[in-house]
Length: 168
Image 1 (cartoon, rainbow, N blue to C red):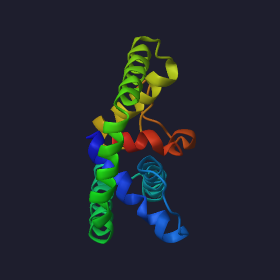
Image 2 (cartoon, helix red, strand yellow):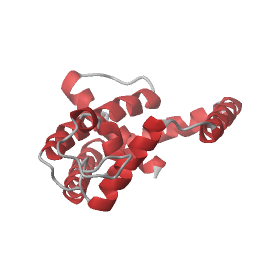
Image 3 (tube, rainbow, N blue to C red):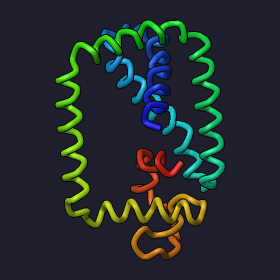
Image 4 (cartoon, rainbow, N blue to C red):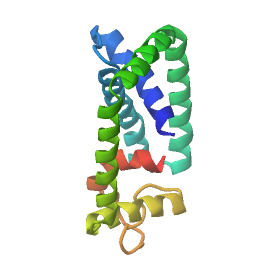
């Protein structure tokens, strides 16, 4: 799944490249630009739908269709550079095996230590909000702690689209 997401970021980086005329020095720079482009577009699409109290299913289907359409168009127009860039990435991996292995070990240790650490009330609240959204098919209708129905749309939560993406 992570490889597919990186591939989507890779292709979506062509949007700012086309608009602003940016040239990429490395594949990682390209993926970072794609990451920001992807999430900016997600916020533009999802935020009004959350505010209009549309269902999780509607937002998921709409966003899935947009990602499929945009990525297909970008693959059709920029797919020829993929083979060249993947060749560069494979060469880089072969050249820097020890550095990549050390980075993977550090990331693994970090992930393990985070999983073993205390998850505070805010983490539990976000997980509760995501769970209630999946169970009820609505964003922010229920409190993440108590599970009670909210009388209003909590804008503090509704403006946080990063974890809304993980619900979708």
